[in-house]
Amino acid sequence: MTGETTAEDVRRLPTRAVDCLKYIYKLRERGERVTTSTMRERLQAQEPGGQLSDASVTQLFKSLAEQGYVDHTPYRGVELTPKGVATAAELVRHHRLLELYLVRHLGYSWDEVDAEAERLEHAISENFEDRLDALLGHPTEDPHGDPIPSKTGEVVATHTQRLSALQPGDEAIVRRVSDDNSDMLRYLASLQLVPGARVTLLERAPFGGPLRLRIENADVFSEHAVGSELADAVQVVVAAR
Amino acid sequence: MTGETTAEDVRRLPTRAVDCLKYIYKLRERGERVTTSTMRERLQAQEPGGQLSDASVTQLFKSLAEQGYVDHTPYRGVELTPKGVATAAELVRHHRLLELYLVRHLGYSWDEVDAEAERLEHAISENFEDRLDALLGHPTEDPHGDPIPSKTGEVVATHTQRLSALQPGDEAIVRRVSDDNSDMLRYLASLQLVPGARVTLLERAPFGGPLRLRIENADVFSEHAVGSELADAVQVVVAAR
DNA sequence: CTCTATTTTTAGAGAGATAAAAATTCGGGA
DNA sequence: TCCCGAATTTTTATCTCTCTAAAAATAGAG
Image 1: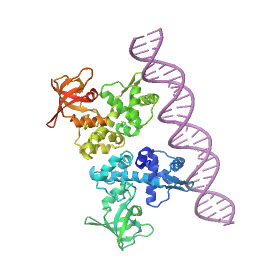
Image 2: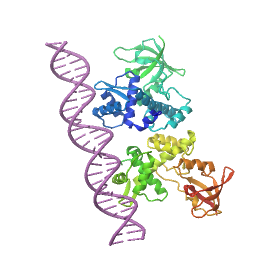
Image 3: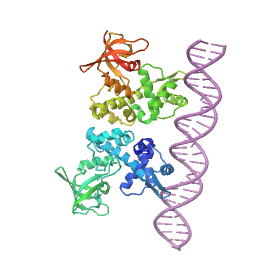
Image 4: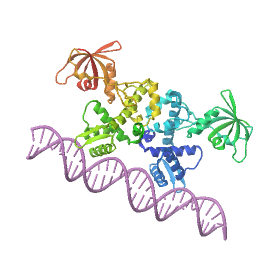
């Protein structure tokens, strides 16, 4: 028995390699295909001002494939193996536990936590992770509504759709918002368009135009027009149609 | 004006380089000379199973000297420049704030915190540091009695001496204990030989033999014999002689 | 002055990066 | 269906950085 190595992998592999697994995991959450250039953009965005070529990403893919974390079909992209899923889930678990902790116990606002968690997720120990988990009451969602994988990598799946997919007259509950754009998060908070809020689509302009919404959160009502970029970043569950 | 770069240095420099500055800082705290081989041992102990040669340390010294963090006198050793002191103090500040935080808010025991802080100290942001500092009430000492440098690198100096330097009959207050040996810390805790405790040296055996001590902490009294290694690791302030 | 332990220099190996060249995919037109 | 060309991905050759082993240099004790 070689024992559980997933947790160690997160700290043993180069930061870039684990981040790569994490992004594959997150892109797959949204059902997108993972290509070399997509990954280069992602990894590059991570390190401000950092340079990274497509060729380097190809080599990273090959190296991760050799180590059994991904299946790499040349010219087609990569998919996580079970081992890769486990490792990525462990890192994502760190990230989301940290985000929730930073908001609840250190007074961070939800638009600040992504960047801080990005750094810390690689450094914390198994012990730290477990203490956070217990202190937070074994949570299953982070402040943005993203599911927190369990220690064994399972997630509570919720069937959601994009806010942009609603039809006029539909009522829905916000479940999840994209967490990686600070400015958007601040704006969403100002609209009260947060997980748990109830939205009604009043009207939608054609050709990707704005959506007019009625928003209710904590008994406060408002009405706003939002653009398609924002409506794509918000996941909802339809309550009435 | 190029602005304050110290905080960024901690995250921009390679981990090993910042750790090197930290160890120079800590060795100087105890007035020890910093040689190539000492540093190699220190850095090697850091990474379990890690290999590191003396030659690498020499190159690290040269590189840090070129960047203005240390003065390197070949064959003699290194000393921190003001820039080096500032950078090391910033990292030590991270470390000690984290140690105190882990004990106070996450239920860690004082023998666990060094290893965890070691990892986190490189990852936290300026923002995180400031929040910790405020939450802890701007502390000046960590759980082991080590001073926490201010944001500008100043420390509250206390004139201490080793417990092993006491004479029979001396009474002293424990101020500080060495933080890097888990087993010793657990043992010290079991003896109540912690910062704030009052000790009286009853007797000392010759030739580096054991010291017989009377220990008082929180109105609990006890008597123990301790060896010289332990007596060297505890710093005290004499109260009565 | 000489001997020994330590430190530094030197030479070269390995990881990880890039630019440029080669290979492959994919959509559209004959 | 086949072929072409643009876009993308992979390969190749090379560069830089960091490390080590071995050789050379130096310090310090006797």
